[in-house]
Image (cartoon, rainbow, N blue to C red; front, top):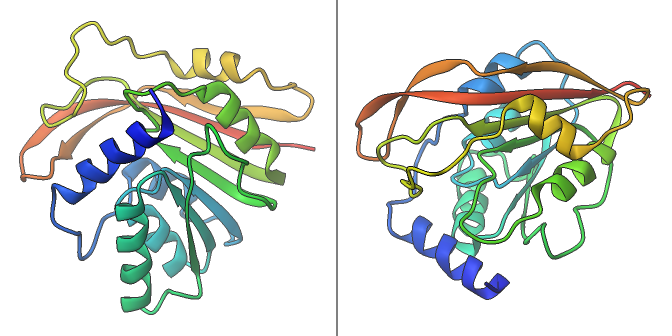
Length: 209
């Protein structure tokens, strides 16, 4: 399917739910980043913007990217309303088919970068790793199970392990090191307030040189 189809799909997903007034950051981001010195961050697939806003409040300069214009417009307005307009830069882009955001980053986060459309995730994540400055980290958090409110309820969906994701990216060990690769569980809250236990696949890669 085309990029136009993907844009229409994700615009529809975001438009179907009310704009979040105070979106919360992902748990795996807060446990990973707390204590790190702020720098330049890239949020791939920023969605409602909870991660971008949380990072900005800590002093990070955040480039937030999403394929959905609805998500990007809402986040830009929200950042301004929270006094974070100077800290958060938004871009609507399909990173699978357009050029990767320019610049060097101390943190790149990709939370639940899943889609029903064709996406060469390995290439996108490889570009993300190459965009890191020395000492910078790439945090990839994938679904390890489907929540009841997920758009993907296919029982045949397979969730690659963090080690499989790392192998697929194909990074040179002398330049990048895997700092974390595990599958923790947590209780998540859906858009309608329901809760469920879910599994995250967490991969943390640091650029060493």
